[in-house]
Length: 280
Image 1 (cartoon, helix red, strand yellow):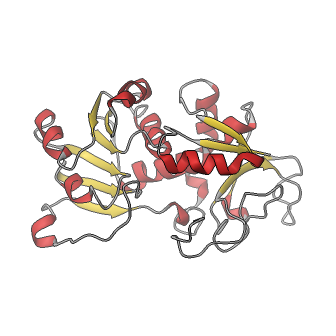
Image 2: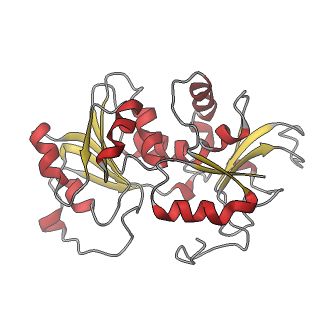
């Protein structure tokens, strides 16, 4: 968004935040209520969360009760809302299934692993670009971790000959065709990110689309709209799971706002291995 690659961009960036309500003209929230806010045009069509005060639609607010510190709270909302939506809305994950998270080391990937590994009897596998990250993903609940390459499907099918029930592909266009080869008949592939770049690629359904495999896409910018209400997302439960240590979701780095350039540099280096939080 800072580089102008996302189209709409407001002068003040930032698509999520946590804090306390200062004023709510509708009367739905009392002053001092702890909340998380995501999307709703923040950072795109209205001033975003890189600010002391942020004004958001009430459709994009989660009221919360939690003892978590602000920095820990801030590491959860957008990533976990997106991961939950991908797993339950797009991939239709059910107990007893096997799923693969492509790009597991990312903040979104870690959120998906945390959530999915606590669905009864779901086997969670993931990929990472570096073997050094394998222990991190295993600690989050992965039964197996594969090292990313352009032909990852052949390695996965060597371990799961029938394929998995669903793939959440956060790497994007550079891996999507290979991800389609990973799932079994009636399985799902959800494109949920573009960590590997968003350059267009050639796609011929006749050659590239396996029969009876479902391909879909989830954009978190839809959260809070009529078809994707926040009320269906159990954000309060996410906070409680974090409080109780069920989810391992603390931020990997916390920066003061005056150091935001350093935060962006870390994010662009792809070395963060988790969520970066900025505090005022």
